[in-house]
Structure formats: structure tokens, C-alpha cells
Amino acid sequence: MTDLATPDAKTPAGTGSDSGTRPAPGLGPGAGADAGSAPDPGPTPRPRPGPGPLTRAIRGGLDRLRAFDRRRPLVWDAAVTAFWTVAAVIDYTSGGWRTVARDVTAPQSLVLLMSLCFSLPLLLRRRHPMAVLLLMAPVSLVNVWTGAVVQAAFLQLIPAFQIALRLPLRRLGAAGLVLCAPVAAGAARIPGIWDQQLVSYLWGFVFVALLGIAVCTRRDYTEALVERAHRLEHERDQQARLAAAAERTRIAREMHDIIGHNLSVITGLADGGAYAAAKSPERAAQALEAIGTTSRQALSELRRLLGVLRDDHPDADRAPQPTLDDLAPLIERVRRAGLPVHLESPGEPGRPTPLTPGRQLTVYRVVQESLTNTLKHASPPTDAPLSATVTLTYTPTHVDARITDTGTSTSTDAQDTPALTPAQGIMGMRERAALYNGTIEAGPLPAHGGWRIHLRLPLEDHPQ
Image 1 (cartoon, rainbow, N blue to C red):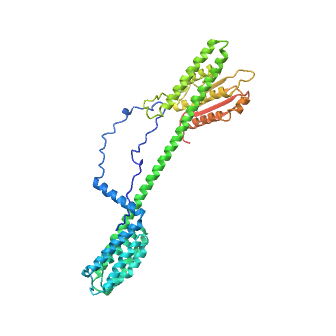
Image 2: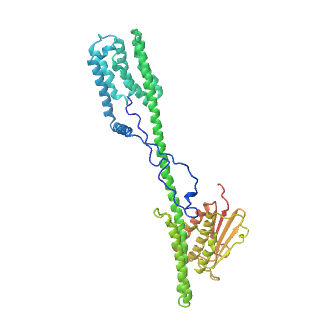
Image 3: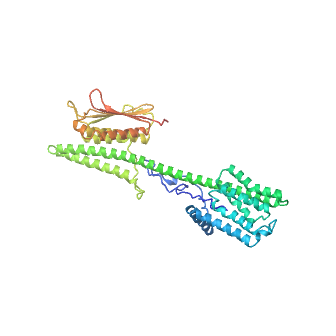
């Protein structure tokens, strides 16, 4: 009678406690933390046993039957209708209806007709259950009024169940009235069948109504669970895509800083070495040595950056990222590439709070990118050599980094690369500063020419 109304809920992959995902390896200290330092989680709970073979076989058979019903509902409706029609005809041909009939002299043709009228309309019980019940109501009145009382009359409970399952509750009350009114009218005519017919109809209707409501509630709950699982899976995939995009942006920023800076230094050293090769072979040898050192350092940084991205290298190098202590070697490399750089830190002795590793990396990368842009895009002024100044200033709440140079942009730079490369570098600086609620100001110096980069970072995180 349930007509395959309750498909089982299937939990989508990835919504349980073990979704199979792993946190992406990070760079910097603490990325390879010792798992042994974690507190003991206690004894591992014993896994719950799965369903037995018989349960799995029954569940699989029901799933296949429901799937077939969803593909071809008319076949299942016809099979159910044929089953109850054959049962009603057997009750008529065997004379079983006489065992409960109030009047065994009822016409045989009328008994057969009523049996068919109670069973054949079941073909439409799921599509039009209220219409089927209304079609059976006159036959039910004739059944009780003539005293034949055929057993097929209880087939009216099947469309009543479908009404409770598929239609609003207000239609269920009307269905109960349509089901019980003919029986009540017949009981008023034939005394003695009140408790035998009307009470049994009432109990049957209450049972199928509660069953239909329970099945409908479980079906709605199952659909809600499936929808929620699909939504969570979609949100998980979306978060994974956002995390992957953010990671690609971070890696691209790191690659830009590492490759752009080191290649600029190498280019400057190569040009200086070629110029000094004829007059001072010792200076040319020093330039070549500096090129080798810078290249090895760049390869080491790239190897560390790319090594943590490989799943087959769990022991990849996770050395700390550059800090403010690495500014001096950075500036020394730039000086060897031919750009005089002055480092000033007037607030260093009174630094109020140590910078976090992330903030130190941001300051380092901004200084590195600024000096790289000076090497690549600035030309020396006519009256003085090209130079740069890095100034770090600490306040009780912020750290300021100012990088200025005395260069001027040439027409070649304006035509070739200034529109893309410097803009990408400044964009990366702004993204780094925004991670810590910092700001970047970039622009030409108004007085004597040159370029200025001003980074301002708060020492502590403040909610925006």
C-alpha cells in the first residue's frame, strides 16, 4: 500500500567527518609541527559494524524497485491494480463475500460490478487520488445499502493513503468524510452493522492517514537532508576553489618577488662585469661570483617554494621566510649590482613591539620589490648618480617603510614595460599590505624627481 514512497537517504561523499581533504602545507616556521606534541586523544572508538548481508540485499532490492518505479510509474500502477482486481474477482468467484454479507441474495452481476468498480480505478490512485475516492463513494453506498458488503470496499483505503501522502491535510478531512458518509448512510438503514462497518472504516482511515503523514514527514526530512548535503558539498567545493585561487595568487606573488628581484640583480651584475672585463678583470670576476651567488640563492628560494607543493616530497625544505634581519644582505646584493642603497632605521633602538613573521616578510618583500623596480625602470639623473634610500621608522602603533630613489623614467621604459611590470609589482605590494590592514602609497617625488614607496603597517591586528 505504500507504493514505494520513501526513498532512502544517501549521504554524499565528503560530508562526513573524514572528507579525505588535507590542509595545504604552508611556508614558514611551524609548518612542519611535531605531531607528537599534541595531547593524547584517548582510546580510538571502535567502528560501528555495518549492515548485514540480508539487510544490504533487502535495501538494494528496494532501491532497484524504487528506481524502476521512478522510470516507469505506469507499470507499477498497472501491476498493483491488476493484483487487487484479481483478488476482488477471486473473492467473487469463490463466494467469499457471502461470509460477511448481510444479504446473500444480492444479484451476482451487481457484486461483480462493485468488485471491479472498487479495484479498477486504483490505476489512477497516485495521479488523482481524490477523484478515485469520489468515484468509489457511490459504489460504497450501493454496497452497504444492498447488504452485499463485498470485501473489495476496503480498497478505498488505498486512495485515502495517497491523499494523506501527497495532498494537504485539509484534503484529508474531506477524504475521511467521503469514505465514511456512505457507510453511515447504510448503517442508518440496516440496524446492527454500525459497529461492524462504520467503526472498522473509521479505524482503517485513521491508520492509513497516520501512516501517510508519517511517510510524508520522513520523505520531506530525507529530501531536506539530501539537499543540505548537496549544499554543503557545493560550499566545500566553492571554498576549495577560493582557497586554490588564493594560494595561486600567493605563489604568483612570491614567484614575482623572487624571480623579478634576482634576475634584475643578475642583469645588473652581468652588465657591470661586461663593462669592467676589459679594464679590470678582477672586478669582472667578482661580478661573475656575485652572479653565481645570486643565482644559487634564487634557486634555493624557488626550490623551497615549489617543494612544499609536491605531495611526494613530505620532507621538503620549510626554512623560515625572510625577516627584517635579511634586509642587510638584500641591500648588499643590490649594491653589488650597481645601485647604491642607504639603510636608515631611526626607530630601531626603541622598537615597541617585535613584528610578527608575516609583517616582517611584508616589509622585506616591499623593500625588495621597490629596489627591483629601481634597478629595472629607473635611469640616473643628469647631475648625480642613481641611488636609493630605505628608511624604517617605528611608532607605538605602526611601522613605516619608505623607499625612495633619485632615478627618472626613460622613454624606452615608458614604451616597453612600465605599464605592466611595475603595476603588477605595486599591486602585489598592496595585496601584501592589505593582509595586515596596511597601506601602500606609490608615486613620483614632487621636488627633485625620483620615485617613492611608502608602506605603513599596524603592529597589531585591528578588526575592520
